[in-house]
Image (cartoon, rainbow, N blue to C red):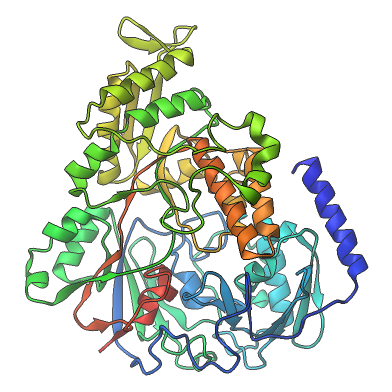
Length: 598
């Protein structure tokens, strides 16, 4: 943390203390900017079907395996579905608004205009699956434990808490130590666990004891690495809450684990899986000529959405030489011929991702102006040339697979960086050859990396392509033990504290974050700080655009492409709502959680 930021936090704490008990009023919901779209007394989210029938079974496919049932810690591999199926938070997110929460475990939320603190009041009827009440002590213990012993994604918010205490029988109050208007919402989405379950044993140790949650499902059966089955709790306390009506309609949800993506696809073809999100445009257009699809037992649905593309691509680890040199990263990016790849592998169906917040009002566009330029101006001398003007975009090729213009530009950059050609091979002043390794886990990524490596070879450099199993891949990414990997950062319309987990300077050295590229840039820190402190929509968008601009200028990722819609293959016996929410098919709550079996 910089001295400037420490001073800002200290000043905020002092001013918050001087401000006294200035308060808003208890509300049914809270929005990041403005007010919630739904008034108190709404009966259900507008995109859900209140009359959806309950019952039936849904089967999903997952690649890999699991050896833990605790997804809230770094150790072990746990099914992601444990959290949405079994564990609830104080508030629930609307998938139809950029970032708005409505009461779940908490019936009200209260925060002052400056959001220097937040107060939640629990619903008296909130219960865990074993029938015990959800208490203020459970909430406080959960927040403290996750912040200190949980996965690193929980630590950013915990570091911003000055005090957390009980305010009444069903009320807790949290005071913050830094200006971050998102913190009340972030804590509203924190998992709430049962304190008594963890008495006498360390929380940070992985294990296969099912978590006792307050959510709609409990684990009925499992076999590590093979399957896990969730069964809907007939006595679930929250079934009739407005935020839950029309959701969680299947009596049983089962996740089958497959060794690789090819095995999963075989299961889809046999009808063993009810839902399959298909990101392969060629397969979507040409690959459904099998009995289940031809007979209508498996159907395909395209779902429109309004969320950012996020970033998906090859990630450079800038912690390591020679990728610590931006010129080398740019040269390798120039060698990747996306236009050729898109046409040959994807029939031209994908649109190149041009920034981290592409396809949204949050992506940078043209010269930085106004508040966006103001945020970045103190760092102008250290930013790459052109950052504040048009910024950096992924190079465009002629689509031949041998774009001489791009390769000449790449060669010039390598020369400038000290990697000259000696006997046909790029070497530095010490005579060391230019060699990097791309670590992959899927057939698709292996194909893309192999195509890229051929282009890199034309520059006199060498790119090794190494395929490993899912467990080794996860471990090496977690420890930043790689040169190049693939990653996808999903972005919302209201990015916030998670951006520090993705791109914060602390992640350059701290294992387990999603700062795979190793960025540690004061301009990035300033943009994130401005984003979290923004009170109005205009300032917020300017800060996100500044962040987007600086990340792209660093050339940390060679982007792939994105589909224009979400594409879901599913059993004919399941149905979804008449219209999808703003976020489209995005996780359980905006995806299969809204569907039902006829």
